[in-house]
Image (cartoon, rainbow, N blue to C red; front, side, top):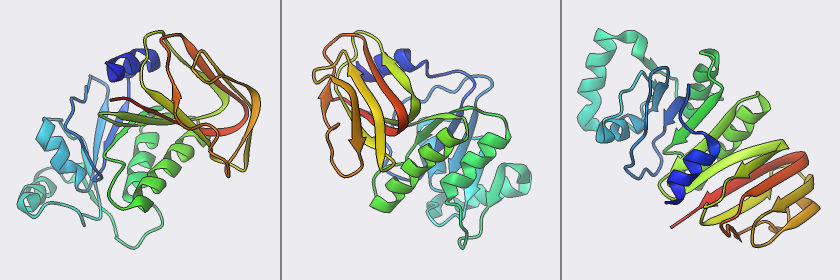
Length: 227
């Protein structure tokens, strides 16, 4: 139930760039509508095939591609070379960041990122930094999986409607986030300063009320999880 309510609260689903990475992935339905653009990042191509998600672009250094589908990708490169971008493994941008830059170049302001957690922990942290990159460039973005959603807010508020369940945690992505207020949750907070060395914002609980999270100055990572 939590995921469906979350989609309603955040208005997920219009004019979005869908990015599917090669991290841990729970097979779930990903709703791709007309006007959406789907980028498979390296081994994320196999996940897209698994759930029947049409891929508009495959990008990566191809180090996590399943050997069984390499012939298919080689054929795609021959037939539709514009749909495959092979990156040099020695580069500054991660494969995921390269994919996100393309989404930005195409004008998308709304990003849904899957397969971005698990595996090597540094990859998860890098993808969280990608959320910050998108926020700092005027985009909204969400890392999604079956039981978790991550997003970043900066000098703004985010609202969840009544009926939301599960847990919400928040963490300062800078040294300090000031004016942090939590309303309508089990553990309220009023114009607090949240620092990056004390996890005061972990494991708050939705209580069935409309809730609002505000940060007046700074950047917060929000993690919503549900069973």
